[in-house]
Structures are given as structure tokens and as C-alpha cells.
Image (cartoon, rainbow, N blue to C red; front, side, top):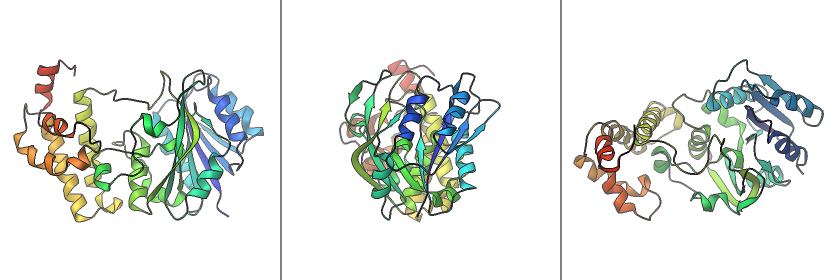
Length: 312
């Protein structure tokens, strides 16, 4: 029988961590092992984790200094890979959420032959009050995404809602620095290596508060968005063989990389209109306002600053 491993990266999470760990203890289908990397916390997080070692099968590594969200999760997954077999299953965890008691049981049953299964979540605030019954609905997240949409940077995989096969780690690790959040990297690999299935059942209470590493809305300036999108497209082009992209998908990634490199430099990009219009369904998966988005995407960084007063 496949084991289920929970992988958690913590950083100064003392406020909510006990609630999260209590929800792991309360799982109907208990985790077989919990890998935790503490990313140089300066609060009582390490002490809390040690206290719960008597209730959960925790393997804890404490880093001497903060390395950042992506690097800490990558480190935790590296440690897990050394202990797991390809048929084992991995559930990613965030330090501030609350898992519903049926989470692991529901996802284990729902994964079937897929590489990754994705549940939904109730959205709560910092005090635990339910704000929205469905994270997928409030964040406008689709249940499935074409590969080209993933190449374009749209991702429907929220790590804390997913369960995936440990076999993906051979391709996923180490998580490249150009990856903004690990969810997108794991998502595109899962989509190309066994597929993703989504279920409607909420499996956690997803907490929104001021310190979320990932939350609602785009917090990036136009220039930062250009930099991040250029880096992502370059990474996809570089890793095309590892990702298993078809020639058509690779050509799309290359065209997208050229587009993002140009977009930040030139006031307008009339030559991009054909590319944007032809691929509008992948670039702008939400139908509302798609034409306006295509036209807006012909504008580069300087024009956006001039017209809208955005700060660099």
C-alpha cells in the first residue's frame, strides 16, 4: 500500500501552526510521515514542531537562516524523495491552514490513475471565520487547464489542496529559481506526466491573512510581472524536453518568451497582435474582457506607466 507523506515548510508560523498540526492529528486517514523544513524561524515555531513529534511522525530539519518559500519547499521535497518510493503519495501543507478531517482519505480515493488530484477549499480569515465556501470560485480557478495556458503562466494547482505521486519528484527537483511558486512547476509536470483530476469537495480551510505567501490578487507591478513572466517562459523553453513538450508547445513557449522580452521595452507592439489574437484562449482563459486584454497586451511598460501612472 502506498504511503502518504506530508511535506511542510515553516517560517515564523507560531500563531496558526498548532491549529494546522492539530488538523493533521485529526485526519481520518493519518499521514505515514511528515517531513518539515523550518526556514530559519525566529519565533517559537521549532519548539511547537518538536512538541508535536509525539503526536505525529515528524521528521524535522531546521535551517540556520531564512532561504525563502520556494527554496524551503524544494529542500523539504528533496528530503522526502530520499525516503519515498515512486508509488508513494505527497500532500503539500501550508503552516496556516486547517485540514478538514477527510482530506487525505478523499484525495487518496480520488487520485485514481492521475499524477495529481486537486480538491477545493473553504476560505477563512485570520480568526477562522468562513469568508467563502469555495476557493476555486472566488479565485476564478478552472478545474482544468490546457498545457499552453500553463505555459503562459496560468496555474490551477494550489499545492495545499493537492495530492500527487512521488514519481514526479524525479522531474520536479530541484525546483528552479525561475519558478515563482512551486505549485505551478508541479502542476505543469503533473499535467504532462499522468494528468490532473479535480474534485469539487473542500478538503481544507484556506486561510487568508496579511502574511500569506500566496493569496488573492496580483501584487506585482507591471515591470515585475514582465520580469517574472519572461523568466517563466525562458525556463519552460529551457526545460522543454524535461517537461515533455510537443514541438507545437515548444514553439508557443518560444514565441511567448520573445513577446515578454519585447513587451517591457517598447511603447506598443503592433506586431504582436496576430500572436495575441491567435492564442487569446490560452493567454486569457477567462472569457470576460478578452478583447480588451488582447488590445491592452499590445502596450509595453513605458506606455502603461504613462497612461496609468504605475510605479516601477
